[in-house]
Amino acid sequence: AQTVTQSQPEMSVQEAETVTLSCTYDTSESDYYLFWYKQPPSRQMILVIRQEAYKQQNATENRFSVNFQKAAKSFSLKISDSQLGDAAMYFCAYRSGNYGGSQGNLIFGKGTKLSVKP
Amino acid sequence: EAGVTQFPSHSVIEKGQTVTLRCDPISGHDNLYWYRRVMGKEIKFLLHFVKESKQDESGMPNNRFLAERTGGTYSTLKVQPAELEDSGVYFCASSQGNQREQFFGPGTRLTVL
Image (cartoon, rainbow over all chains, first blue to last red; front, side, top):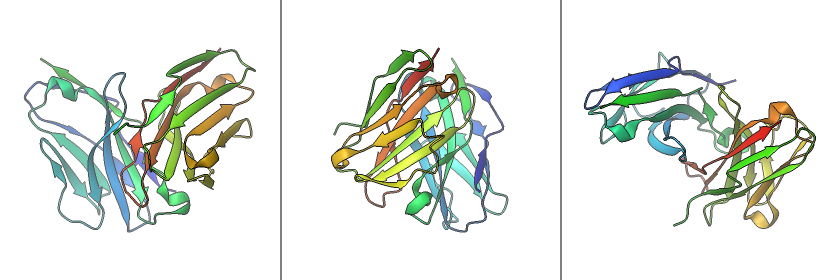
């Protein structure tokens, strides 16, 4: 069974600086997707960034980028030029590439609570 | 476009009572998922609907949980009778076809006393 591990329950970053959130996963599949979701306080979860396992290039979305190390099964999120609005719970998630049946669901880590200091 | 909505946002009930949670997916999304996060733990998958059919209910904890999606639109998740360990935040998500992204609702926080 696939598992996702986020080893940092809480992180803190100074505004305008860079922070990296860690995520490791375990799977025997070769085709899968990895996601970072953000849940601000009292708001709904939104997708931050997505990575297809078959792509070697790391995904980037504005100030958010990932370091995807497939062999090491590592998928860290880097937030550059941190802003106060980045404060949230961040969840790393895995989804099988074999869509359909039981593979459509997401498998989540426990989350990392990010605080941004002004 | 309206996002995924869930009702109620909070529910506090006594052990042994019944509670029904509702999820309205994004219009046109065939896939609807229920997840649950118990305090301090991972968000766990409960079940997956494709239209009105249960595609996968392997994450349902026990037979006290009943999910329905009549007509393939909104879904309800009933807990009967509720137990203390059912407390947590219940999330609903929807996606269209084979779309990789799931769109989440704000969640329902359930507290069983």
